[in-house]
Length: 247
Image 1 (cartoon, helix red, strand yellow):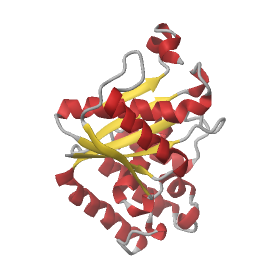
Image 2: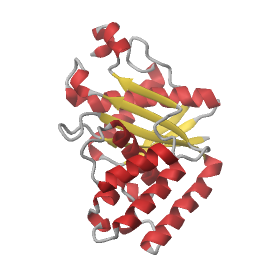
Image 3: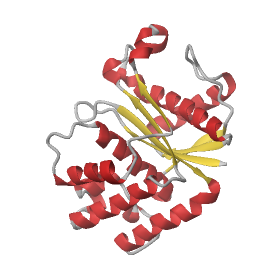
Image 4: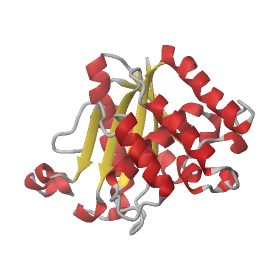
């Protein structure tokens, strides 16, 4: 059984021109060891392994020195983030990436989160088919999208995804579960991975030291720019197929 932990970077123009979902697929037998590694980072940084708001890893806050990272030495913050990213780069962790570009869509940009989730479900199905395993989706709780995502997955499991080349969904079992990120080290790890995806995609011009250091670390020390299954949409191919896909 695989647990697929995911997080989002939402479309917020002009600062964020794309909608991202990043996910880490991990065998149940490997989760305790990976959790233990993250807890050791928490112990070294926060002085505690306890799961609370005050001991939650959140990549953007670590880079910016915001929230409960305010006042902490920048070197310590970035070192902790690099350790998290190294764990996400572990060979035992499979990666799934989805990127939706609203400015290229025919449909309203407001539909970007739903479309991203649909493609994420499809990519998860494809990756689970590769490994011949079943999986459960676990995401960072966001009240705005949680109920709709649960409803959508239920429909996809019954009818397949609603596209011209829609897919049957039979490897994802049960529902999609959403939990507060401070309750799960694995969801926090998915947050770090999703931050890495959008950082690697963004233009490097104007990077200040924190982002520049993390970008260089990602490129030289990890392979996080590559995913086991990914989707970028709309693509040239989707435009060629016409509005039945692009809309």
